Image 1 (spheres, rainbow, N blue to C red):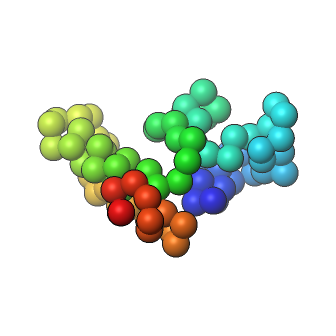
Image 2: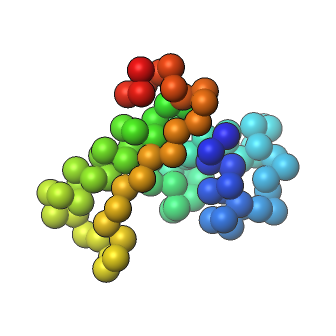
Length: 86
């Protein structure tokens, strides 16, 4: 559920009640839904992998606006037993 606040802050607040409904907002990040969703996910436990990917892209010379180089992973309790955290 970490992406729900992200959806609200990136202009989808008016549709937040349509989460996980037919033709509504996805319950996860979805690239086709918003330009602010940098990757798609279909399960939890992606934060460490995503942050690592952003950091590697940065280190390989990806285009980063001034002062936006940090990659931070926020891990919820449901993600501790899966993915990279496991």
